[in-house]
Length: 72
Image 1 (cartoon, rainbow, N blue to C red):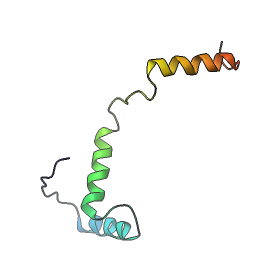
Image 2: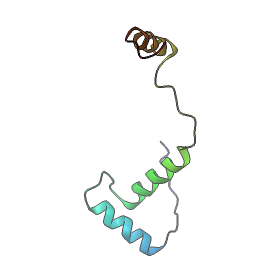
Image 3: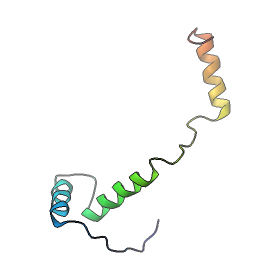
């Protein structure tokens, strides 16, 4: 993970809302950590998802579903 930082300007009112949110006992330690997480998620939401199952696992699931009569 990158340990270099820079500054991003946001409206003070937004900063205060995030600060209140963070202080309510979230997993975030700071406004910066929350903003970084939200921005990271926003940038990666359209990236292709990695496969949950390998091709072999997928075939096993299909075979099991066929055996149970769920698919033909």
